[in-house]
Amino acid sequence: MDIILCDELLQEIFHRLPSPSASAVSLVSKRWLHLLRSSLSSLSLRLSPNHHHHPSLSTFISHHTFLTSLSITSSTTTNSDHLLFTIATTCRNLILLHLSTGPVSISPLLSLSTSCPQLSSLSIILSRHNLNLHFLPYFLFLKALALTVTGNASPGFNSDQFTTTSAQLQLQSLSVSGIQHGDYALNYLWRNCSYETVTKLVFENCDGVGDNYSFNCLIKGLNNLQELEFRTCRSIIGSILRKLAENRCEKLFSLLIHDGGNKDGLLHFIRETNCNLQKLDFRLPLDLGDTHLFEIGVKFNRLRVLKLQSCCMVTNEGLKTLGLALSDSLEELSLTNCDVVKRQNGLLVELAQSLRKLKILDLSYNRMLLDKEFVSMISSYTDLRKLKLRGCSKLTDVSLISLCKNCKHLESVDVAYCPGIQVEGVEFIILNSPELRNVQVEDRKLSEVARRWMTNKFIEVHP
Image 1: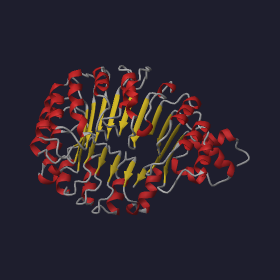
Image 2 (image 1 turned 180 degrees about the vertical axis):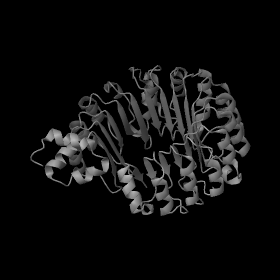
Image 3 (image 1 turned 45 degrees about the horizontal axis):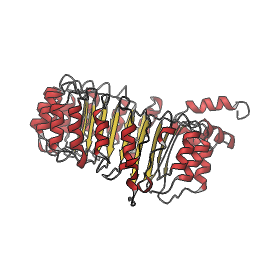
Image 4 (image 1 turned 90 degrees about the horizontal axis):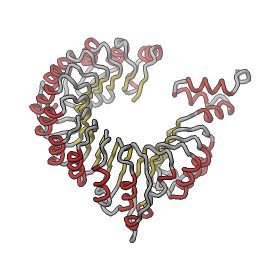
């Protein structure tokens, strides 16, 4: 067979194989290994902590000449210039590059812009010591940029604030991480982003935005902004939310705030904005309360997705009022590690009676959730498609039996790290859920019968 099949036919077969089979294909022969590598269009690598970009990594990358998507991450921060040069000379078809091994220098980035002219998504780490963004215009088709700034600044590093060079960057998605008050080199980015094209803006671990005037000019013009995310940005989030409320960004439909909010700024934004949010994702243990929930119910009555994680200050009254307000629209609800679920017995049952249109439910890490409440609740969710119960340590097989009886359209279930759920319960749900396609559970809880059934029904399993 190895002789009969031509290279093109083998590569087409490789494309159609499920991903777990790739490791077996690579062991057949050197020819198959070469063809497999050359046929891959997407590759994701995670480097070990003691890896220091040995030549073997560059050699490995050089074998994958047809990659359009490449992601390399590492838990250690090292210079990645040599690796980036290898990528630039080898992977000329790249459209997406995520390089989280930085920092990188300007020279290999310029080489990358020439060698990979179709690159549209770039994620890199730059050193604050030599922060310079004038390479960006050379990526002619760049639509998504994720920029992380690391290291300490040196004297004179703010000189970029005096430059007047201009370029029209057609970015649609912009993510910045690690920005501080003195990072005036970011002004080049704020001044040159096209106001009309930016639809997604992400801030992570930011204590500042560089020069406030340049940044405010950008914020005032973001009329087409659709998605906004803040992660650990307590010092800047209040002012940005207030400016966006004044800007009347009517197209904004998704807001995420994790680990550091501003009570007053968030409340002002909810009350004053003209946008019609459809997705809210909050992880705010001390910055989200019932007042926010009441206002959300009044203002965003078409909300489709609500995610609350570790929100300790909300009460059952706030959630029940919000559930009633969103009864006709909410399709996805996440109450992850929420203290109110533990404090208030029966809350989930009352919510279920209001939110009968839910298709996705995440109750992960609610360790005091009992079978009795779950069974009473799940009978209202007859159209549920995805359910996450990861880390719910009090639940047993009784809950899974009730789940199967009530949710006939279940496609995905996560019951990992639930010690009360046994092999029999997992087997029962796999055999009695006709539309099930994805299961997340420990490997030791899969019986031989369950494994055979999953193979026949093409059900994927993840830990």
